[in-house]
Amino acid sequence: MIVESVEKSTLGSAPVTVVIPLYNGARFIEETLTSIERQTLPPQQVIVVDDGSTDGGPDLVLSHPLGATLLEQSHLGVAVARNNGLAATRTPWVAFLDQDDLWHPERVARLIAWVVEHPEDKIVATSEIAFSAVEEVNSLAAQDELVGAWASVVVPENGAYERLCREADVTGSEEVTHADHRDMLRGPITVTTSLLADAHTLRLAGGFAPHALAMDDYWLLVNAARLHPIAKIDQPTIFYRVHAGATSRTTRLALPFLSSAVALRYGGGMAAAEEALARESTGPLHDHLFTELVRSAGFKDPRVRSAARDLAGLLWQDGKRAELRKDSIRRRASWLVPIVRGLRSRVDQRARV
Image (cartoon, rainbow, N blue to C red; front, side, top):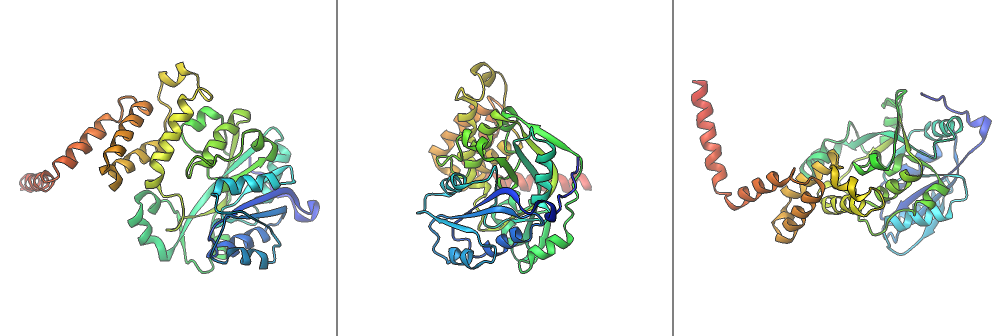
């Protein structure tokens, strides 16, 4: 169900803290803060946790009219930064925003209206609109095929927020789904930027996982989904920026994500041993990342190939063995590839004649 926005004049501000981890994000942080400043229902608290930036980003935070609180730490990583922000949260609800993403002006109002009407939902996520700058379209496609095709909206980098607010369709629909931890084991259902959560629930779930490279939020959400199913609303009030400097590069996520999936599945906490052994628990992201791993330059390393074989056997049982064998043959007999292509071309030409 689509919930109408709660007017700013009736509530004043929302009992929400926004936590923004910052690391060398001077390029985008001002626009990100402006997207919070423009909220029709502003959050009560905004905390920016600087993770040892060297590019002047913290100074931009302090000079921005939003008046965010700046916390500083040595370079300990995004998970520690988010946890420090969560620890400093003094409101019942907390939301997370990355330094390069943006919020539609109605976002906080819509989410607060939702949790007021649905108090049983302790963690709420929304859909998002992925966008990229016109200037980076070609470089993104060359860097990562999946990421290059991710953005559904392309705008000039200069004035991106104003353009998105004016032109993007954030109407959404009445569709709402709930995901428990078994659903989450099949892969992430959302991005961290889309969350509004009961702060106490996230603390009970253990916070973000510093040990999980680029997957700290996924570990938290799987744990949190054991406590309360995660509601996902089809309300795309997040503008998720896809750019060349982002950390969400699929090629470097493959081993961390797949090994995390194995640990979560067979660790005994999320699924009983009998259940873990009885059926596969993977999703499209697992498949894509495994394929990216096999195609990557790092796969030439025999240690990576050995790890991939072990992960494939645990996650898909026999389902990925053929793909590994095919790639092994292709690499060992690479000289055959142009010959086979030439033969196929000749066959096709004769067939057309």
